[in-house]
Length: 274
Image (tube, rainbow, N blue to C red; front, side):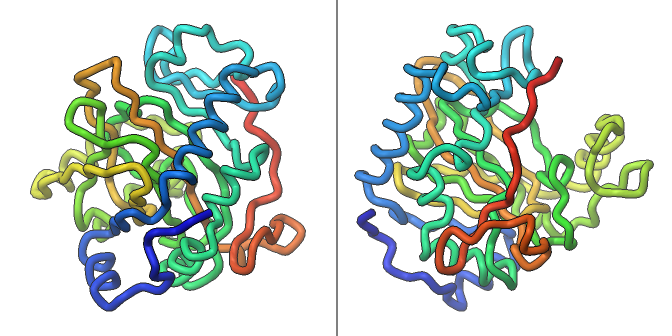
């Protein structure tokens, strides 16, 4: 893969912005050949879904919103709206190579104080339209604050195709603790957590991420973020989003080393809802 972003280390300015805002933008990190390769991989998956029987999809619109389905069971028309294709890193060498690009892994390792381990990946075709949320509600890391998320732009992120919004500095807000004593939602009611978000983030002005294909957005696992409404339903906003924990927080039997400083979690595809 050709690269445009030359550095694989964080500058003092990167560290300052990360500490203040909880997110970083790396412009032109991947070249257009890499972007095209990922987009072609996903397009091939959608043309040949029967070849990927274990892949699951989360539906983000329609009457099936919130439902997880096997990719073969998703009605064709739902692929023309917001969905998440889960965990292609388990199937695709191309996706896995992007998630654990050596330069990216080095940067993430500096942010995490340890080599990154992919715990999931999400391919979006359209904007997510998800409301403001914390990733830790759904995948709290084994060690507090040791999770980062990365979104690789595979399309332009513009006002009309549902770009990501983030709340700068929200990673410094004490996390909501659910009644079971954890910061992960598990089976708890999300309503009180959403009210907590509204109360604690009221003074923060959200910012919108506008990116070009190949740009990379990295955010802290405790940064409040979501997807803006899609104003033009015909415009895709393809992206590859990956969440990382630290490899050293898992035993060697539960991780696989893929690159010089990057790992993937040993796990199966997520089951569809029954």
